[in-house]
Length: 408
Image 1: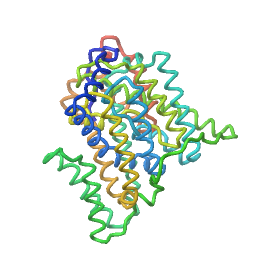
Image 2 (image 1 turned 90 degrees about the vertical axis):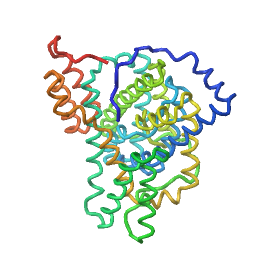
Image 3 (image 1 turned 180 degrees about the vertical axis):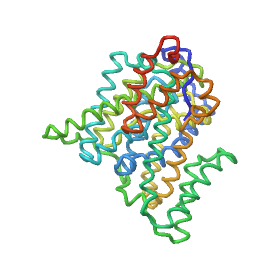
Protein backbone atom coordinates (compact mmCIF):
# COMPACT_ATOMS: atom_id res chain seq x y z
CA UNK A 1 0.00 0.00 0.00
CA UNK A 2 1.53 3.35 -0.95
CA UNK A 3 1.97 6.01 1.67
CA UNK A 4 0.65 9.52 1.48
CA UNK A 5 2.68 12.32 0.06
CA UNK A 6 1.98 16.01 0.53
CA UNK A 7 -0.69 17.27 -1.81
CA UNK A 8 -1.61 20.73 -2.89
CA UNK A 9 -4.19 20.98 -0.14
CA UNK A 10 -6.97 21.93 -2.54
CA UNK A 11 -10.34 20.96 -1.22
CA UNK A 12 -12.60 21.73 -4.14
CA UNK A 13 -14.12 19.27 -6.54
CA UNK A 14 -12.55 19.55 -9.93
CA UNK A 15 -15.07 21.72 -11.84
CA UNK A 16 -14.36 19.82 -15.04
CA UNK A 17 -15.35 16.44 -13.56
CA UNK A 18 -18.98 16.66 -14.68
CA UNK A 19 -17.77 17.62 -18.11
CA UNK A 20 -15.37 14.69 -18.05
CA UNK A 21 -18.27 12.27 -17.61
CA UNK A 22 -20.15 13.83 -20.52
CA UNK A 23 -16.97 13.75 -22.58
CA UNK A 24 -16.57 10.04 -21.84
CA UNK A 25 -20.15 9.35 -22.87
CA UNK A 26 -19.66 11.23 -26.14
CA UNK A 27 -16.34 9.69 -27.11
CA UNK A 28 -16.19 5.88 -27.51
CA UNK A 29 -12.44 5.75 -26.90
CA UNK A 30 -12.68 7.56 -23.56
CA UNK A 31 -15.76 5.57 -22.57
CA UNK A 32 -13.96 2.35 -23.44
CA UNK A 33 -11.01 3.36 -21.27
CA UNK A 34 -13.27 4.03 -18.28
CA UNK A 35 -15.23 0.79 -18.69
CA UNK A 36 -12.05 -1.24 -19.17
CA UNK A 37 -10.49 0.29 -16.06
CA UNK A 38 -13.62 -0.55 -14.09
CA UNK A 39 -13.63 -4.15 -15.29
CA UNK A 40 -9.94 -4.57 -14.42
CA UNK A 41 -10.65 -3.18 -10.97
CA UNK A 42 -13.55 -5.59 -10.46
CA UNK A 43 -11.24 -8.54 -11.08
CA UNK A 44 -9.13 -7.39 -8.15
CA UNK A 45 -12.16 -6.56 -6.00
CA UNK A 46 -13.82 -9.98 -6.11
CA UNK A 47 -11.13 -12.09 -4.40
CA UNK A 48 -10.27 -9.41 -1.85
CA UNK A 49 -13.87 -8.58 -0.90
CA UNK A 50 -14.51 -12.29 -0.44
CA UNK A 51 -11.38 -12.68 1.67
CA UNK A 52 -12.13 -9.67 3.86
CA UNK A 53 -15.63 -11.00 4.55
CA UNK A 54 -14.09 -14.26 5.75
CA UNK A 55 -11.64 -12.30 7.93
CA UNK A 56 -14.58 -10.53 9.58
CA UNK A 57 -16.40 -13.83 10.12
CA UNK A 58 -19.15 -13.01 7.61
CA UNK A 59 -20.67 -14.85 4.65
CA UNK A 60 -18.65 -14.25 1.46
CA UNK A 61 -21.75 -12.82 -0.22
CA UNK A 62 -21.83 -9.99 2.35
CA UNK A 63 -18.38 -8.90 1.19
CA UNK A 64 -19.40 -9.00 -2.48
CA UNK A 65 -22.66 -7.15 -1.83
CA UNK A 66 -20.73 -4.63 0.23
CA UNK A 67 -18.26 -4.08 -2.60
CA UNK A 68 -21.13 -3.30 -4.97
CA UNK A 69 -23.17 -1.06 -2.66
CA UNK A 70 -20.29 0.94 -1.21
CA UNK A 71 -18.73 1.43 -4.64
CA UNK A 72 -21.99 2.62 -6.22
CA UNK A 73 -22.92 5.08 -3.47
CA UNK A 74 -19.45 6.60 -3.11
CA UNK A 75 -19.00 6.90 -6.87
CA UNK A 76 -22.29 8.78 -7.22
CA UNK A 77 -22.05 10.96 -4.11
CA UNK A 78 -18.31 11.11 -3.43
CA UNK A 79 -15.84 13.87 -4.13
CA UNK A 80 -13.01 11.79 -5.62
CA UNK A 81 -13.60 10.60 -9.20
CA UNK A 82 -11.73 7.37 -9.85
CA UNK A 83 -11.59 6.36 -6.19
CA UNK A 84 -12.72 2.83 -5.43
CA UNK A 85 -14.45 2.13 -2.12
CA UNK A 86 -15.67 -1.32 -1.16
CA UNK A 87 -15.59 -3.91 1.63
CA UNK A 88 -12.16 -3.22 3.12
CA UNK A 89 -9.68 -5.09 5.28
CA UNK A 90 -9.17 -2.32 7.82
CA UNK A 91 -12.89 -2.23 8.63
CA UNK A 92 -13.10 -6.04 8.65
CA UNK A 93 -10.34 -6.31 11.24
CA UNK A 94 -12.04 -3.81 13.53
CA UNK A 95 -15.41 -5.55 13.23
CA UNK A 96 -14.30 -9.18 13.59
CA UNK A 97 -14.46 -9.30 17.43
CA UNK A 98 -18.03 -7.96 17.38
CA UNK A 99 -19.14 -10.60 14.87
CA UNK A 100 -17.63 -13.34 17.03
CA UNK A 101 -19.20 -12.10 20.25
CA UNK A 102 -22.61 -10.76 19.17
CA UNK A 103 -23.31 -12.02 15.66
CA UNK A 104 -24.16 -10.60 12.26
CA UNK A 105 -27.15 -8.49 13.32
CA UNK A 106 -25.02 -6.55 15.79
CA UNK A 107 -22.41 -6.08 13.09
CA UNK A 108 -24.94 -4.66 10.62
CA UNK A 109 -26.17 -2.24 13.25
CA UNK A 110 -22.58 -1.16 13.87
CA UNK A 111 -22.13 -0.55 10.13
CA UNK A 112 -25.20 1.72 10.05
CA UNK A 113 -24.09 3.59 13.17
CA UNK A 114 -20.56 4.02 11.81
CA UNK A 115 -22.01 5.49 8.62
CA UNK A 116 -24.20 7.89 10.57
CA UNK A 117 -21.18 8.95 12.64
CA UNK A 118 -19.15 9.51 9.47
CA UNK A 119 -21.87 11.82 8.15
CA UNK A 120 -21.86 13.76 11.44
CA UNK A 121 -18.07 13.98 11.45
CA UNK A 122 -18.10 15.21 7.86
CA UNK A 123 -20.60 17.96 8.69
CA UNK A 124 -18.46 18.94 11.68
CA UNK A 125 -15.36 19.32 9.48
CA UNK A 126 -13.52 16.15 10.47
CA UNK A 127 -12.04 15.89 6.97
CA UNK A 128 -10.00 19.02 7.66
CA UNK A 129 -8.91 17.70 11.04
CA UNK A 130 -7.46 14.66 9.29
CA UNK A 131 -4.71 16.96 8.02
CA UNK A 132 -3.36 17.04 11.56
CA UNK A 133 -2.48 13.35 11.45
CA UNK A 134 1.33 13.26 11.08
CA UNK A 135 3.00 11.15 8.36
CA UNK A 136 4.57 8.95 11.06
CA UNK A 137 1.10 8.02 12.30
CA UNK A 138 -0.09 7.36 8.75
CA UNK A 139 2.88 5.05 8.17
CA UNK A 140 2.20 3.36 11.50
CA UNK A 141 -1.45 2.90 10.52
CA UNK A 142 -0.44 1.24 7.25
CA UNK A 143 2.19 -1.00 8.88
CA UNK A 144 -0.14 -2.08 11.68
CA UNK A 145 -2.88 -2.85 9.15
CA UNK A 146 -0.45 -5.08 7.25
CA UNK A 147 0.59 -6.94 10.41
CA UNK A 148 -3.02 -7.52 11.47
CA UNK A 149 -3.97 -8.79 8.01
CA UNK A 150 -1.05 -11.24 8.12
CA UNK A 151 -1.83 -12.52 11.61
CA UNK A 152 -5.50 -12.95 10.69
CA UNK A 153 -4.42 -15.66 8.23
CA UNK A 154 -2.51 -17.79 10.74
CA UNK A 155 -5.62 -19.80 11.74
CA UNK A 156 -6.00 -20.76 8.06
CA UNK A 157 -2.58 -22.47 8.25
CA UNK A 158 -3.02 -24.38 11.51
CA UNK A 159 -4.74 -27.74 11.76
CA UNK A 160 -5.57 -27.93 8.05
CA UNK A 161 -5.04 -30.74 5.48
CA UNK A 162 -1.47 -31.02 4.18
CA UNK A 163 -2.64 -30.09 0.66
CA UNK A 164 -3.33 -26.55 1.84
CA UNK A 165 0.39 -25.76 2.12
CA UNK A 166 1.45 -26.49 -1.49
CA UNK A 167 -1.64 -24.63 -2.71
CA UNK A 168 -0.76 -21.58 -0.62
CA UNK A 169 2.82 -21.78 -1.92
CA UNK A 170 1.53 -21.91 -5.50
CA UNK A 171 -0.70 -18.92 -4.89
CA UNK A 172 2.15 -16.90 -3.39
CA UNK A 173 4.43 -17.80 -6.29
CA UNK A 174 1.86 -16.60 -8.82
CA UNK A 175 0.82 -13.45 -7.03
CA UNK A 176 4.39 -12.25 -6.46
CA UNK A 177 5.93 -13.25 -9.80
CA UNK A 178 3.13 -12.49 -12.27
CA UNK A 179 3.30 -8.67 -11.91
CA UNK A 180 6.95 -8.84 -12.98
CA UNK A 181 5.97 -10.60 -16.19
CA UNK A 182 2.68 -8.92 -17.08
CA UNK A 183 0.14 -6.50 -15.62
CA UNK A 184 -2.63 -7.52 -18.01
CA UNK A 185 -4.23 -9.76 -15.37
CA UNK A 186 -4.28 -8.84 -11.65
CA UNK A 187 -2.01 -11.17 -9.68
CA UNK A 188 -4.66 -12.04 -7.04
CA UNK A 189 -7.12 -13.09 -9.74
CA UNK A 190 -4.54 -15.28 -11.50
CA UNK A 191 -3.56 -16.88 -8.19
CA UNK A 192 -7.18 -17.69 -7.35
CA UNK A 193 -7.82 -19.23 -10.77
CA UNK A 194 -4.64 -21.32 -10.82
CA UNK A 195 -4.95 -22.56 -7.23
CA UNK A 196 -8.59 -23.51 -7.80
CA UNK A 197 -7.67 -25.33 -11.01
CA UNK A 198 -4.77 -27.14 -9.32
CA UNK A 199 -6.93 -28.36 -6.45
CA UNK A 200 -9.57 -29.63 -8.90
CA UNK A 201 -7.13 -31.33 -11.26
CA UNK A 202 -5.26 -33.04 -8.43
CA UNK A 203 -8.45 -34.06 -6.67
CA UNK A 204 -7.36 -32.54 -3.36
CA UNK A 205 -10.05 -32.02 -0.73
CA UNK A 206 -9.37 -28.75 1.05
CA UNK A 207 -11.52 -26.10 2.80
CA UNK A 208 -13.35 -23.89 0.30
CA UNK A 209 -15.07 -20.51 0.31
CA UNK A 210 -18.41 -22.30 0.11
CA UNK A 211 -17.66 -23.90 3.49
CA UNK A 212 -17.64 -20.42 5.08
CA UNK A 213 -21.12 -19.36 3.98
CA UNK A 214 -23.47 -18.52 1.16
CA UNK A 215 -22.55 -16.87 -2.14
CA UNK A 216 -24.80 -14.43 -4.03
CA UNK A 217 -27.72 -15.94 -5.95
CA UNK A 218 -29.73 -12.75 -6.35
CA UNK A 219 -29.87 -9.08 -5.44
CA UNK A 220 -29.62 -8.06 -1.76
CA UNK A 221 -32.88 -7.19 -0.03
CA UNK A 222 -33.57 -4.08 2.03
CA UNK A 223 -34.17 -4.57 5.74
CA UNK A 224 -33.03 -3.08 9.03
CA UNK A 225 -31.10 -5.28 11.47
CA UNK A 226 -32.84 -6.31 14.66
CA UNK A 227 -32.15 -4.06 17.63
CA UNK A 228 -30.59 -5.65 20.72
CA UNK A 229 -32.59 -5.47 23.92
CA UNK A 230 -29.75 -5.75 26.44
CA UNK A 231 -27.41 -2.93 27.38
CA UNK A 232 -24.38 -5.19 27.09
CA UNK A 233 -24.83 -5.53 23.35
CA UNK A 234 -25.03 -1.76 22.88
CA UNK A 235 -21.91 -1.36 25.00
CA UNK A 236 -20.10 -3.70 22.60
CA UNK A 237 -21.56 -2.17 19.42
CA UNK A 238 -20.91 1.52 20.14
CA UNK A 239 -17.09 1.47 20.39
CA UNK A 240 -16.79 -0.82 17.36
CA UNK A 241 -19.00 1.52 15.33
CA UNK A 242 -16.88 4.51 16.37
CA UNK A 243 -13.66 2.68 15.50
CA UNK A 244 -15.03 1.64 12.10
CA UNK A 245 -16.00 5.25 11.40
CA UNK A 246 -12.57 6.65 12.26
CA UNK A 247 -10.59 3.93 10.49
CA UNK A 248 -12.75 4.20 7.37
CA UNK A 249 -12.33 7.97 7.22
CA UNK A 250 -8.57 7.80 7.70
CA UNK A 251 -8.05 5.26 4.92
CA UNK A 252 -10.49 7.01 2.57
CA UNK A 253 -8.94 10.44 2.99
CA UNK A 254 -5.44 8.98 2.64
CA UNK A 255 -6.56 7.41 -0.64
CA UNK A 256 -8.15 10.67 -1.78
CA UNK A 257 -4.82 12.45 -1.31
CA UNK A 258 -3.05 9.82 -3.39
CA UNK A 259 -5.60 10.21 -6.19
CA UNK A 260 -5.19 13.99 -6.08
CA UNK A 261 -1.44 13.62 -6.50
CA UNK A 262 -1.77 11.20 -9.42
CA UNK A 263 -4.48 13.07 -11.32
CA UNK A 264 -3.38 16.60 -10.46
CA UNK A 265 -6.85 17.50 -9.21
CA UNK A 266 -8.30 18.54 -5.87
CA UNK A 267 -11.11 16.42 -4.47
CA UNK A 268 -13.70 17.54 -1.94
CA UNK A 269 -12.67 15.69 1.21
CA UNK A 270 -15.78 16.67 3.16
CA UNK A 271 -18.01 15.37 0.40
CA UNK A 272 -15.98 12.16 0.31
CA UNK A 273 -16.44 11.73 4.06
CA UNK A 274 -20.22 12.06 4.13
CA UNK A 275 -20.57 9.98 0.96
CA UNK A 276 -18.70 7.18 2.72
CA UNK A 277 -21.11 7.51 5.62
CA UNK A 278 -24.10 7.27 3.29
CA UNK A 279 -22.55 4.21 1.64
CA UNK A 280 -22.12 2.42 4.96
CA UNK A 281 -25.68 3.23 6.02
CA UNK A 282 -26.91 1.76 2.73
CA UNK A 283 -24.69 -1.30 3.11
CA UNK A 284 -25.97 -2.02 6.60
CA UNK A 285 -29.59 -1.62 5.51
CA UNK A 286 -29.05 -4.13 2.69
CA UNK A 287 -27.34 -6.69 4.92
CA UNK A 288 -23.93 -6.09 3.36
CA UNK A 289 -20.44 -5.54 4.69
CA UNK A 290 -19.34 -1.98 5.37
CA UNK A 291 -16.17 -0.53 3.93
CA UNK A 292 -14.08 2.41 2.87
CA UNK A 293 -11.66 3.40 0.11
CA UNK A 294 -9.32 0.64 -1.04
CA UNK A 295 -5.91 1.99 -1.96
CA UNK A 296 -4.80 -1.02 -4.02
CA UNK A 297 -7.92 -1.13 -6.19
CA UNK A 298 -7.88 2.64 -6.57
CA UNK A 299 -4.33 2.47 -7.86
CA UNK A 300 -5.37 -0.18 -10.41
CA UNK A 301 -8.24 2.03 -11.53
CA UNK A 302 -6.45 5.38 -11.66
CA UNK A 303 -2.83 4.50 -12.38
CA UNK A 304 -3.02 1.34 -14.49
CA UNK A 305 -6.47 1.85 -16.00
CA UNK A 306 -5.99 5.64 -16.31
CA UNK A 307 -9.56 6.20 -15.12
CA UNK A 308 -10.56 9.81 -14.51
CA UNK A 309 -14.33 9.74 -13.98
CA UNK A 310 -16.98 8.11 -11.81
CA UNK A 311 -17.98 5.86 -14.68
CA UNK A 312 -15.03 3.56 -13.98
CA UNK A 313 -16.11 2.93 -10.38
CA UNK A 314 -19.71 2.32 -11.45
CA UNK A 315 -18.41 -0.11 -14.07
CA UNK A 316 -16.38 -1.90 -11.40
CA UNK A 317 -19.43 -2.27 -9.15
CA UNK A 318 -21.57 -3.54 -12.01
CA UNK A 319 -18.90 -6.03 -13.05
CA UNK A 320 -18.53 -7.37 -9.51
CA UNK A 321 -22.28 -7.94 -9.23
CA UNK A 322 -22.56 -9.58 -12.64
CA UNK A 323 -19.56 -11.84 -12.17
CA UNK A 324 -20.58 -12.79 -8.62
CA UNK A 325 -24.06 -13.82 -9.74
CA UNK A 326 -22.88 -15.70 -12.81
CA UNK A 327 -19.89 -17.38 -11.18
CA UNK A 328 -21.33 -18.05 -7.71
CA UNK A 329 -20.80 -21.81 -7.95
CA UNK A 330 -17.20 -21.37 -9.06
CA UNK A 331 -16.55 -18.90 -6.25
CA UNK A 332 -17.94 -21.42 -3.76
CA UNK A 333 -15.42 -24.02 -5.00
CA UNK A 334 -12.49 -21.64 -4.51
CA UNK A 335 -10.00 -23.11 -1.98
CA UNK A 336 -9.42 -21.03 1.12
CA UNK A 337 -5.72 -21.57 0.38
CA UNK A 338 -6.10 -19.22 -2.59
CA UNK A 339 -7.53 -16.45 -0.42
CA UNK A 340 -4.84 -17.05 2.19
CA UNK A 341 -2.17 -16.50 -0.46
CA UNK A 342 -3.93 -13.32 -1.61
CA UNK A 343 -4.18 -11.98 1.94
CA UNK A 344 -0.51 -12.70 2.70
CA UNK A 345 0.38 -10.89 -0.53
CA UNK A 346 -1.75 -7.91 0.53
CA UNK A 347 -0.05 -7.84 3.93
CA UNK A 348 3.47 -7.95 2.48
CA UNK A 349 2.79 -5.29 -0.16
CA UNK A 350 0.83 -3.08 2.24
CA UNK A 351 3.64 -2.88 4.80
CA UNK A 352 5.81 0.20 4.24
CA UNK A 353 9.20 -1.51 4.35
CA UNK A 354 11.00 1.80 3.90
CA UNK A 355 9.66 2.98 7.25
CA UNK A 356 11.70 0.33 9.09
CA UNK A 357 14.77 0.34 6.86
CA UNK A 358 17.98 1.03 8.86
CA UNK A 359 18.79 4.04 6.67
CA UNK A 360 15.34 5.55 7.30
CA UNK A 361 15.50 4.97 11.04
CA UNK A 362 18.99 6.45 11.20
CA UNK A 363 17.95 9.63 9.40
CA UNK A 364 14.62 10.11 11.17
CA UNK A 365 14.47 12.27 14.32
CA UNK A 366 13.87 10.14 17.40
CA UNK A 367 10.35 11.54 18.01
CA UNK A 368 9.26 10.34 14.56
CA UNK A 369 10.50 6.83 15.33
CA UNK A 370 8.80 6.89 18.74
CA UNK A 371 5.47 7.90 17.18
CA UNK A 372 5.77 5.24 14.47
CA UNK A 373 6.63 2.45 16.91
CA UNK A 374 3.95 3.54 19.39
CA UNK A 375 1.27 3.63 16.70
CA UNK A 376 2.18 0.19 15.37
CA UNK A 377 2.71 -1.40 18.77
CA UNK A 378 -0.50 -0.08 20.33
CA UNK A 379 -2.58 -0.97 17.28
CA UNK A 380 -1.28 -4.53 17.07
CA UNK A 381 -1.62 -5.02 20.83
CA UNK A 382 -5.23 -3.80 20.94
CA UNK A 383 -6.25 -4.92 17.44
CA UNK A 384 -7.83 -1.47 17.16
CA UNK A 385 -6.61 0.76 14.34
CA UNK A 386 -8.57 3.75 15.63
CA UNK A 387 -6.86 3.70 19.04
CA UNK A 388 -3.45 3.54 17.39
CA UNK A 389 -4.18 6.55 15.18
CA UNK A 390 -5.65 8.65 18.00
CA UNK A 391 -2.90 7.91 20.53
CA UNK A 392 -0.17 8.30 17.91
CA UNK A 393 -1.52 11.70 16.87
CA UNK A 394 -1.79 12.91 20.47
CA UNK A 395 1.74 11.69 21.20
CA UNK A 396 3.07 13.55 18.16
CA UNK A 397 1.43 16.78 19.35
CA UNK A 398 3.02 16.39 22.80
CA UNK A 399 6.56 16.21 21.42
CA UNK A 400 8.88 19.23 21.63
CA UNK A 401 7.91 21.75 18.97
CA UNK A 402 11.27 21.60 17.23
CA UNK A 403 11.13 17.84 16.78
CA UNK A 404 7.43 17.42 16.09
CA UNK A 405 6.73 15.51 12.87
CA UNK A 406 5.54 17.63 9.97
CA UNK A 407 1.80 17.26 9.40
CA UNK A 408 0.41 16.20 6.05
